[in-house]
Image (cartoon, rainbow over all chains, first blue to last red; front, side):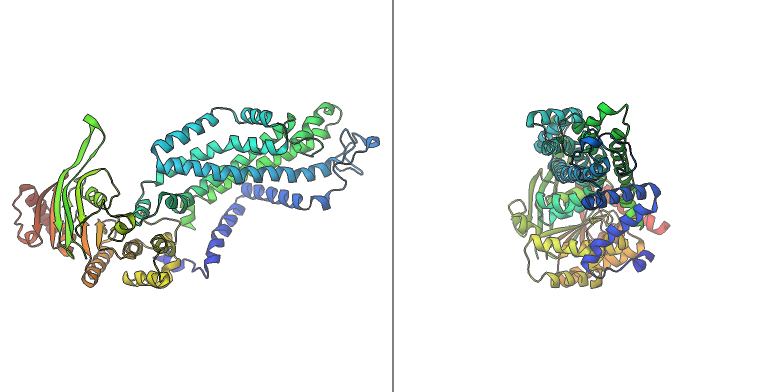
Length: 298
Length: 252
């Protein structure tokens, strides 16, 4: 009974919608690792927003009299083989990275969730067909399949995003299906059926909210892979095309000068490492924060 | 309010030679406004009968008529407004992420009913909860309060028949009495027809006019409440069950 008395009384419906979000945020900040992840991602977002203001040079302006300058002086991170400022290119690259992550996430999340919950809830023939399609996608290594797609569609950043999205929804679908199977025979689903809710309504109102936390965790953990795949495609020349300052592509072109000019590959490499690490740590933190058992304790 | 007529209800799970006949053949009738009990040991098919009546299980044989109309012939909307169910475990029957408001609002939206705020408040008043509970989530409620919300959810569609699947067995003894009083009070005021599943003969004695004793999917005997007092059951198993329950009550 004590927790009834102590339970916060939501003042309005809007506040009750924001409160859990603040709870999760507070929980994430409590552990050092997830706080670090959150801080790096926040920094990434801020850098992307203010990239034009923070950049010391135009990322695409070449200066052939000033090539391969080491870090220091006028150029914080040095210059590349065409005399472009690496710091400015990295800053503008954050926009491309965030763009990739955002587009992949908003396509992969809903597709995976839809396929998984429909297969799990309806079962039978729907389950068989949807899960076999998922298996086909799962049976290829992600990067190889993405390579095949990009090769077929033609190399460009948008095609790389499509290819990454096409290869990263199956694990989400599997996860959503497994979660759905644990809920589908529960009493509250039976109660919803007794109220005359259609299967679509049950999936949208009852099953999706239950699957959402684990799917969000999985998506966050996936982002590291997405960044690496995008960088890999860029490195192979199949993602962002020059002169776009994509981090993977920067490493690819810098590779030729790597032995004499270490700064060409080091800074983009460190950026990729930091961002993927940050997303991994955040995902780990989210797993604890969104755990329903933890939710109830708060 | 409507009567319930169950004739030759049977269900088998599995196919061919491996099929298991869970309910071989069950028939009983419940008068309108009556509270009919189903008792028996675990696995005797009590809850399965309710799940068949409510069409949560669909592959059964026989007929179930509510107010003279077969449940299979009713449309979904009509069926939902005729028969509702209260589940055993109030911790599992409320969606953990839905507020009480959502729980009560959903059926109103599905059935496109008017005066929604009024109906929600009425439903909460009926089960003895304050209206401020609309914005509570299940984890902010106690077991008894959750079961009251579950009853409100069943009543908000104004059904004729309420199926009660061990509505108190997951609750504290003191809370059990509250819920049972609430249920019999609601029946006295509105005249609902109840089918109550329980393994607790004391609950049946308190609530039901008549009850059926079930064993391995079959109804052994249908008895009046009076039969509990002097154990006038004629069938051996029913008599044994009742005397065991009486002996247990004395011992405790």
